Length: 147
Length: 187
Image 1 (tube, each protein chain N blue to C red):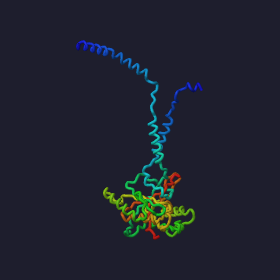
Image 2: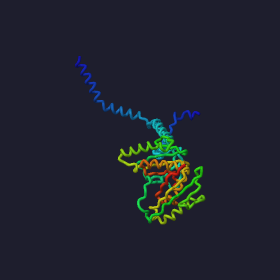
Image 3: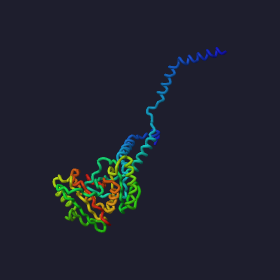
Image 4: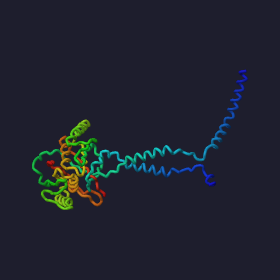
């Protein structure tokens, strides 16, 4: 006990390994974080495909329309009950494109539909988009490439 | 009186001025002697910030599966101009029928049915036979004709089967690139 009492008044802790580790963790999370996934909705479970390739480059003018299992549509963060409810949003997108001297033909509609959603409802979305002038569509699936 | 005081002050100042280097030397010596061997840096604020950053990244991290795309170019249907090109493949129509639950019960291509658990593989091989060595792949077009209530996952399975196949090295061997939908059927 006496020896202990004569020792240093406080023990100096070496923080270096902890700080190293913490900075490595921060770097790891910073690389992993993806702010572009904001359009993904957890209610939509995509069907999987063995050959669906992740996009090589970001799309110039993407417009995302999502469909949940019961056929409701999510667009611009709003849950819509009917396919015709997407018309005002698409018209707004059309106007926005025109102000940028672009055409609806230049835009790409990304469809993220739940795997159990009815195909007829997905086709109705495509039809409404076609009527407004959109031509390019992307059907999104869960990629199994490399698994 | 004033002169006497002034001369005293001048003498004092001059003495002080002359002894300035000596004083400075002493001060430096004093400082040197007063410095500790190791200057302790307070790490607390940095560690606080670092842990806050770590917590932020941990909370905002969302593990999501990789997503892939199928491109479909589908303008509003326009009447075909002129006679069909004899060098082009006949349009391939994939018909998919569903039961009341939306499950696929019948898959056919131009009235040829494909059954069993490997029906998608059969469909793929059949289309590969029609398209041949790939010279017709650019002009080949598949139309998907689906029941209204068919589960969407079967559509993606069909598109995967007609679009190509994945090689063991992960590369996609393309088959048919032009895919379109027939007009939607009534519910």
